[in-house]
Length: 477
Image (cartoon, rainbow, N blue to C red):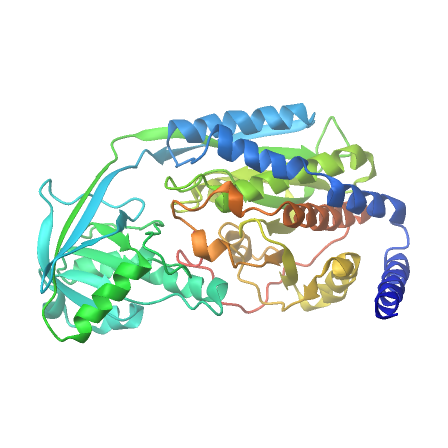
């Protein structure tokens, strides 16, 4: 009886939702929406594309031969899907490569630490650097500490990622990784190490990019595993001087040509519309794992969207542009290049998939107040897939933050992140962490969202609401 009641309740909810949808989108072909949803939820194409990218190519560090191989692979998949409009946007990137990294506590006790260079870090001198370590609690502590306390020392940032709200906290900890090295260098530090930004507790180090400021001394930077960070914390708790030997070797010697790939679904095969709805995913990845969660999952979802929506191009009033950007791991020059090429084209709304392979559970937005009812109506189309309606102050993600900065409306379909922030930027970012059912749900939701906006010719005003302002530190990379 209880199962029967649950079943009846589910049917009543579905009937109510469909009735509401028909009322709100009277002109929209409801049967097409249902067809898109049902096919996406049953199709394993996107999942197998993620498997192929991570198996046949693996890690795709920016400026590497594997990144170029991945772009050629992606171009072939788009050709196989018979995308009518496929374009490239070229850009230049540096060819930074990781060589080696090691660290040892030499006093008060001897310990080998698990460590990885932060992506983009300069090298130490060939025989490394040995110095006393100064423990810094967080970004504000680093800014406030007197320079003479850091001069000639190795700075250790001990701040932990909040495992109760990792997605929100990760944005805050970005300042430590991306800007901390400049502050430490300006105060005379020899090097910087930090606790890996992860919810994991293992002896695996998690990297991520570092950024150097112009006219500032360049010092090496690295991340140590959470377990080794705990060890350092225990050493400092004994109130004894801690001395560390650090050796980091990397290379970077030239500019490399690379490009974004843009697939456009248009009702007019001859001439794309100037109004478009945008989906974003990045193709490049960290070099430590196979880049499954970050972001082969997003690439697979993008390909899945194209497969679902390509048969319905004739029904579109706006173009749908699926943008596969590169250069997301450093300073997001890929998405900046894309925005610089907009010219007279108008972005109606943008969304990005860059939180791994788990299911979507919430819709956040950043749109004008007079567009909220329209967004709420779109939410009803996917509410039966377990999606709650969130807030209207999203700061965006790795690349969509730059749309927010330009006062362009965004929909942020928020995924669960139990896996993502456990394995991000580590050797454990591998395909086994990706869920088939979750990828199918992602493809269904994005396809319904994009088709609904493009089919109906909807317009979202681009008056952006207050939010945590996007800066060079608010990317999830």
